[in-house]
Amino acid sequence: MTLDHIRIPIQLYADKKLCEIQRAILGLATAFSNHGLKISDDDLAAIFNVTRQWINKLISELKSENYIRIEKPGSKYKVIYCQEKSTVQNKLLSSIVDSKGVLLSTPTCSTVNTELAHKERSKYKTLNKYWNSKESLPKIRAFTDQRKKKLDSRMKEKLFADNWQKVIDKISESSFCTGNNNHGWKAGIDWILKDGTNYAKVL
Image (cartoon, rainbow, N blue to C red; front, side, top):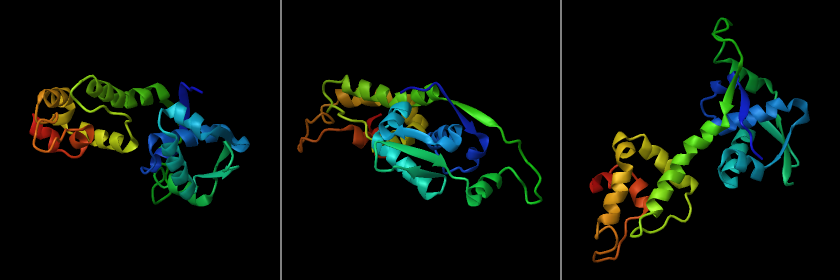
């Protein structure tokens, strides 16, 4: 299953705790209104190019925050409904209405291009492919959600964002980093992404 665009009610941007995928799921559920969104976790994972486990986590958070209710949760195809509880409505309205009840912004809809989301996630594949192209480095078998979070953090650091390929090149060319040391230690991707200091040592 693939989608090009998903319309998201602008009010959903009031809750800063929601990630883009959660807003998109709510946008899909809103589009199906009273009929509910009948979909599997595998389909959602394919649409957003993430793992099934990550989709489960995001949906659980939406449910715990009373954004959605789910029918047939144990079956392959669950039905997701947007909640219409006053607490949720008030939470969303609080950011577009001031203390005197004056409308600060006009509720409308925004359109999310899922191709942009795929482009954003392509950075994981790009780094993964570049790392695995180096014969002297231990192969990355899976770019886990934890690694994605770490990479997101490192990419916010200009030194890493501008030099990550140089870091990988230097590690692959270093005899010490590729196992020629007293302990047989090799620099892996987790060591590089761990914090803002390890990769800086290589440069």
